[in-house]
Length: 433
Image (cartoon, rainbow, N blue to C red; front, side):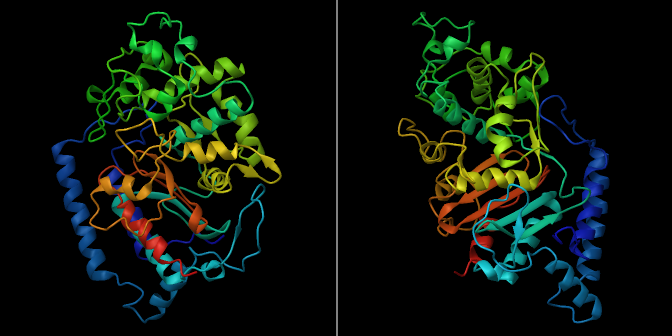
């Protein structure tokens, strides 16, 4: 569709500011590359240049509503290029390709939807791709800078939700008995008979609800391995070995702590019960039915898939995964993920007492989950049935069954985070019927 057309004012400035802000940096992948801090002089130089460009933008560029010239008309047309065109064609499966339609065809207001897209395109957020689906049709889509419709984007922790789906599939196939299987049987480093070793009681349920009680520190306020075990694990290159060496500090199931390490434990579980890597198992049982082929998933030096991060695919293919869950695990005439697993994994587990914003590697109960973002905007307008996959630096798959809505956003935000409550509320306000 026409989603590659740039805003004549906003997108040009986005590119210029993005180039300036990221000039000395390379894109960071959690597996093995870690960014260093800029010098004080570099920061000052950036601040000055960004300030100059901001002044130019404010004084030299007008919004479409302010401009009535031919240039203003062209800008309106360029913005409209981010919206779907055509009519709603009814239920279909996007196995080969997605269909698009104008927002009004599925009960959405084009002007309000454009405002949401424009907010997501704020230069400071370093947005790279965005797609908004209603009733299975693309109503909004945008790409920025050098990122294109077929470009693959790193998922970071969005990959955790894919891993959750793989566990559900493995249980459905009888390869895993249930989520209360003890993980120690897959880790010879842990003695299942040693009752004094807390690790002997860790189950698959604990790994998916981030309640293993293993020693772990994960601080994302700064990108520093000294205060972040996720980065240390990535740096080690041997993810499973790193996790096998963690000590048990708390009784499993008693303490929720956001840990990228917990779902990494599932990589060996899946590989052991299936006989193939988690990535290959996903190829055969998840990606193939959806016709997702432009995809990669990182692994460690021992050949274990990085089940906590490191999946790379396109915005539209992330949307397929979201649409699969919106349809309760069904795709065409096939059950890909059991419907009962979709229901269970996207709700809070009753055994988790400390936090009701997390399911089985999904962020759930969005009004409550997003309330911790410190947004000045109330989460009251967000439906409680919504849930999301989320990764650091601005990766999201939003799924709202009650609104028949899927949103995918990928970014490389390093300085200012987008207000998810504001963005989500803006999109919801565009829904009129």
